[in-house]
Length: 173
Ligand code: NI
Image (cartoon, rainbow, N blue to C red; front, side, top):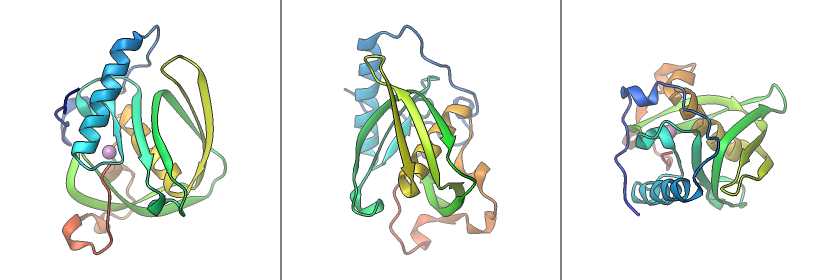
């Protein structure tokens, strides 16, 4: 296992669309997952996408602490080729930050209710419903696979702030 270097906003790898994984080598992808988990924990993040550690692949990890999800924890989830579908037109606005945009946070609109699906390491297809902060984290991480950083989703850029100027506690993802 290794802590990997995190790509910062402006890096080319964060602007490109990441590639679907087909016929994957289970051992190699598992090693990537393990390194991403160690990197995320080292940075106190709650999510990480492979392009953030310079792998142009559709691979994401995340978890949601119970304190951010009405007391309901979402355990560490490892996703290959995730796909998101909004369940309604409803949007929520909340603060986001990102390990590739260190020190900053901003208010970002996201779908309130989504269904997302992904492949496991063994290739089986999983599907989950998510709402609120859980849905937000998944949307933030999957955006990294399409070259999108949260400031590109912001409607009101006047909320872009240094984290230390905001009183609420924020996690980076
Ligand atoms: Ni991010």
